[in-house]
Image 1: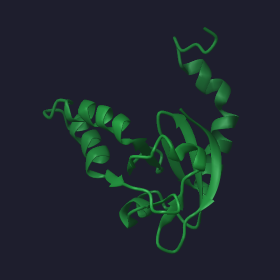
Image 2: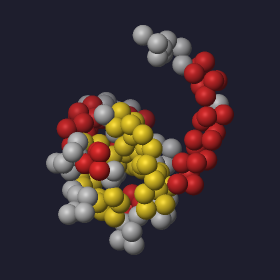
Image 3: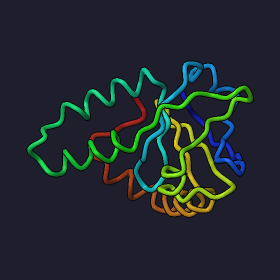
Image 4: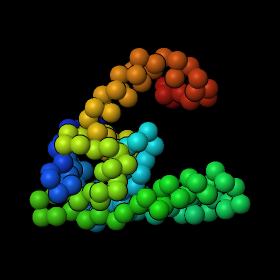
Length: 145
């Protein structure tokens, strides 16, 4: 399970160190793809296979389904760690997420999200301010059972 928030830096070649505690789960590499909210999603290969299967099964006759599948599937890239526990993020993904030098890696149970540090701070500040109204709008979601 991926949880927590970690700050790291991209090097000049686009390599990003993943927190050591997550490397065991990603020991066979991972798949990074364009996420939502202009961040990147990083999955284990096993988790990605399940998600990719569901995306590939979406009806191709519906424009929104095609668009979502294209966004995640065409944007994806297999990644392996180098000897120092870093992943080399492709330029097109760094550009999509507007990643600069400082990034935040956020654990969200079955995936990691990779954010530009400034974008993460802005998003997090807004989300925390609106958390009560967000929770109120999510009918049927309970965290106490």
